Image (cartoon, rainbow, N blue to C red):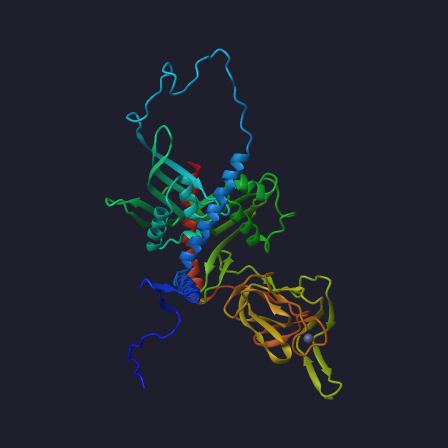
Length: 488
Ligand SMILES: [Zn+2]
């Protein structure tokens, strides 16, 4: 019995000695040899491909795509019709090396490298490496920049169309050929700037520069001419602030009938400023004022109470009352198919409370939040099927049953606005057809949604009221100071 390690002399027909003593390979041997080469090569390919990181694969794909694009550009350029050659008949000399009468300027010493700044705007479908390659950079160098940026937290794949890239480059003067890219600055948001430079070893290094944003309050006032919105916009109030201003007053003022030419407005809102003085973001309205017909002055202040709810209150801490919507449906012609109340169950022969109002509506109709609040439940609840409960304040909650589905993002703890879509009409749970079973709970007890006059927005009291009053004095001082500055 031969041991495992024993070297045996091959006794087969693969290797034969010819009469010159040299080895020759039989036909079958060649096939086997080639086959094994192909198999191992394929194996190496598969293994190496699998070891590539997703970035490498992506970079390769991008590179291939870029190559394709450049090729297409070349083809397009070749297909363009060239202008016809203009022949000046007075010129008899032919420019060529053979003709010594024509002087040829020798390029060389007067070639001066020149540093140039350029702002590139990323277009749809562009990617970072491709942009650099179009400048004349090599792929390897460009991908060095990509990794340098990655080290400081910027992924070039997040590059978006419209984004500006500031580039400082050195070019050859007469030809404009790229000699080097010396600096790249990308500012994906106002709060951070990424700067790529070349170090002494000509390697690219990146740094992230966090920009300190400043909070600032801005006060603007004016006299209403034609419409409130137009007057505000003309006075320089940003559109988002104009819309919020209208939303805040919508419960207090009828814009069509209450506002007359000559009435005045004043608004103070906060905004974020970049170090260079740019407005980065217009934020919340802190103070809103309308003077209607000289006597009716309405002032509203923003306040976040101890439980985190933000609302607008008058100077005494009285909330803007917002009635709960009784038919929170997109399908406004939905009819009541079953009222709230006690009824005798036909089979069980006992009295059962129908704890809400049913609106028959087409499957999939949008269901709105009846008022501002926080989602308390958004889950399956036996006979109720898919069920949502919104808590509006310490007094009121609303419930929505038999939904076919919840709207995206609707889950416990999420804050919703009145009129926001929370789900869709369905027939889940114990239901005989698509409808919305809508409930209003007052202090935890189910009440008739069609009879109750339910309003959200509680007045401030206790510690909240004391804190609110301090906030009011602070805001009033700011508004007065700003208004004085503005009138100077
Ligand atoms: Zn019902």
